[in-house]
Amino acid sequence: MSYHKKTWQEKLADNKGHPTVFEISHKQSKRWGSGTCVIPSPMEVNELMQRVPKGKLTTIDEMRKALARRHRTTIACPITTGIFSWIAAHAAAEAEAEGKKRTTSYWRTLKTGGEINPKYPGGVLGLKRKLAAEGHKILQKQKRYFVEGYGEKLAKLEGWKNYRRERRKRS
Image 1 (cartoon, rainbow, N blue to C red):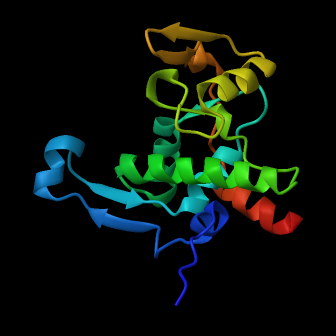
Image 2 (cartoon, rainbow, N blue to C red):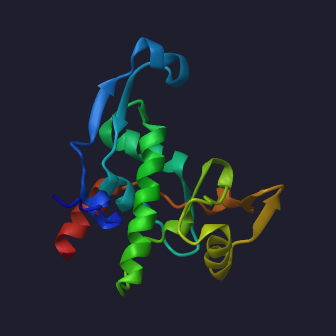
Image 3 (spheres, rainbow, N blue to C red):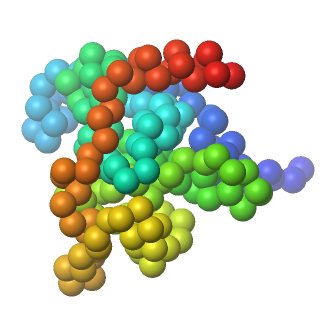
């Protein structure tokens, strides 16, 4: 019996039963506060990343806020949102390597505080190149890299429900 390793695109398409909404437990409330939490699906995170136009940026925290609003929860899980953005980035790089033209512009998604995510395809050097090509200035602070003034360049992730409806119309 042979084992088939999933491609990044297959991982992105596998929703594993998500999105899932749950009540924040007493133990979790020490870190996240009280209320409800959503674990998004990988495709939801990818769709948000696709909404960021050229010259604009987003962060994992901004996406988490949009996901929480969409699911009417207190928060969106920071761990899975970060993991799913990483999967979306690798799936986009994989699709690009296959010759697909329209892929997710993952380099526009930054870590909290405007930091470039070194785990995305291309590493820091590749991401710096792509961001600089879109007019962003990159600052180095010790071993980490940040986009200068990223806060003023954040894309609006509002109207997400309409975006999904628009995508269905275009298909």
